[in-house]
Length: 159
Image (cartoon, rainbow, N blue to C red; front, top):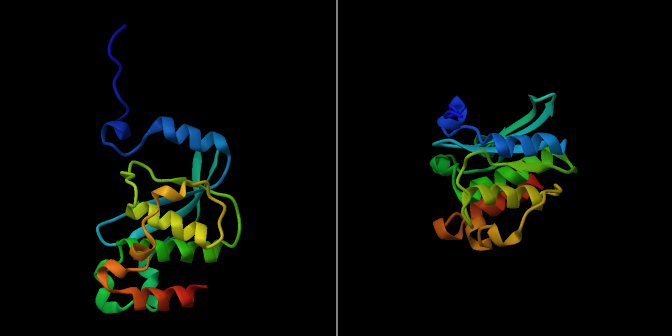
């Protein structure tokens, strides 16, 4: 038996096919979290016969319309912005059960992607997660970068 060539998307570190299969078999809609150099992008995705259909997209750029200071637009990929983007998506979705698809993103305790998950859960969505991986409350509220007042103002406008 010879060597097997790895699939291109796996070779490029874009797709973990084992994890994708588990997500598809569950049949539960998933929330895909991606972070770019400037923003968070959250999408609700439903799979029908292995074909993904995007139902809704929310980006952290939308926080600018909800009271985020335009001078701080460069910080739309930080922990606080991720947390508020999660709350924004949860508000738009209402209630429901979802699973997270973090893709090939590094998942470190207290990381930015877990700030998004914390926001989604606080916003009222039913997502299985361990509270121990979420960032500390003061980091979610922007205490570490001195934007707590702005975060509270935006959060108040989202609820």
